[in-house]
Image (cartoon, rainbow, N blue to C red):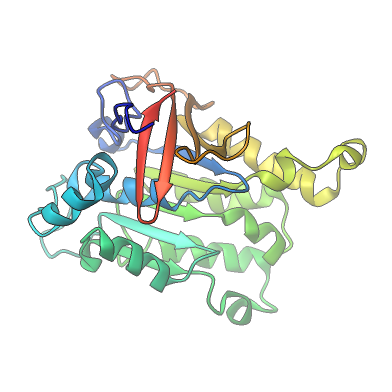
Length: 284
């Protein structure tokens, strides 16, 4: 693999990761990211946030040493729609599996100013804060919090919101109608990150009698795919682990209409290799 030329990440036909066409006035889009056992989506999430701040995923496309050397000279891109008083963030991150310190540490290594993003930590004390409250009230409160002036941004990243089905005892339909749909209508771009191992590989015995929870997980994932313009799937190698390859990143069209966009989804498949804090992409 060392002799194979690394590739730069490209999600759209204009060779961009997050094309400007996504952020035009009154446009709203969803991108769905799935990952499975043995893989982590953190590097891809960081790359999307870095793209929103600097205009491209510099650490993903550069060597680690080069990224560190150039970090201090990085200048955030000026995007239309951001207020002059700095209240509007480049990205808002909401996670149900990682606390705020996890993201501050990861993004700090990329030299991303904490003032350019907002973190909503729904791992710490979420259950204690919402115990006994009606699910509809909690979901409404989350939508208001994520669309408030403090959290307002062009990119909203949700990490494993499907856990709300278990935490609040709601169905996939309820989660989509009362949470996903209102957010999708409120922000220019929403990225949903889901762990799909449990219901994509339920086991031979479970195939005959799927549990209610698995059915709801499948329904949630299906709904996200149909709402998305692109689906980014992260998987380990089907043949097992390799010394110089961690897994594959597959980019495919989602179920949402894209004819209004002047560009297309750049469907592709990459091999990726993650080593310590560095991830590199290669064509298959």
